[in-house]
Image (tube, rainbow, N blue to C red; front, side, top):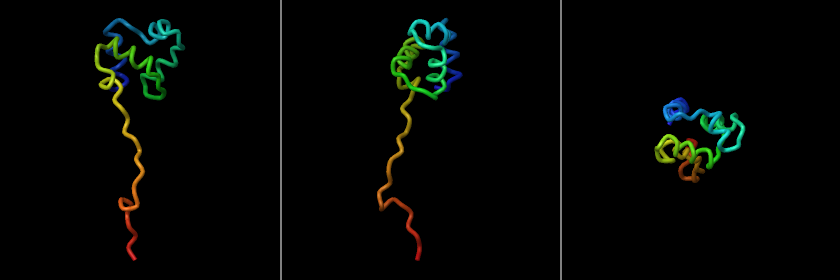
Length: 79
């Protein structure tokens, strides 16, 4: 989900970042960083998913990994 969608869904369920931070005994900046994708915290992400009522993987989908290319996959230089 986009960060703005997450924030809106939280507000619709009556929870602000400040209130969540208080509940989890964290700095509100931490909540903001997780929502905006600049930080990670499974605990925060799972709680946000619970608040929103959506599966964890839908709210915070896994990011694609950077895979190493094999020699066969690398572009070849023409002679």
